[in-house]
Length: 378
Image (cartoon, rainbow, N blue to C red):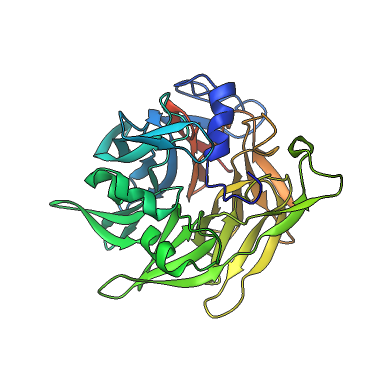
């Protein structure tokens, strides 16, 4: 485990399997969540989702959410956290609007443990020129795709929905296999995607890098890589006191800031030390710089219409804490943190901001029990 690349949601999936019953979201039913009296107004606007992750609004105001699925009957192979994960086509994209939800895309690739935990599949959604585009995670060496059925070879890709089905845009995992920008063991888990005027920007959580997809041929190139940091080894590894081990960056999210730069949030890898996750500012051609620090296991970011930064933590006390509680945090001008909501957030998986509300995919590691919450910010 030491030094191995820990991909998005892998360890948190194990925690939820232990702490959260499969299919049981814990942010309340329809109506207001548990923070209504002493915190923001919370409304459940979608439920019954399979491991919901990234969110994005379309031009008409409809909200779309990526569902990582619940795997399937196989073939099966060793998972990133041990045990077996099996392939299936249970991944989906769900549209939410006018009080209704329905899957606009289904049959997308997904891998998960037999109980639906440890799910990796559709990770994030965006729109460009009105067309729905989405990432599909992998969480492994790109070479493992050769042993999967044809549908499974879309793991690790940037895909786009069209009139005639789903088409391939760019093989993010394939780029990792060839270029390996951070120089580590090949590993790819395309997570967050941002549409730009010239193409797309993707945060590869497994590859520890930020890449762009541009041009008519959707060429992939590196924008930035993110370094590991040395941290104390956890006692259960049995290493001598004072031993330090590398903790990888694991960039999970990318958004464009009010200043036009890219802002990237990091989950951090094993041992997921609390307080060691940062927000990086990235300008192409320049080294990334930390602009806010002291967070724990960031899963997503967003700027509201006033230019205020919000950070979503998947596990506020760390992924090894056995506490699946997440947190939505408002970041002040000088980096100070103000918790908007924590109670009721269970391993949240994605964030979108619109008007005076935050939209969060809740129970992002729950098969059949995931939700989307609307959280009032004013």
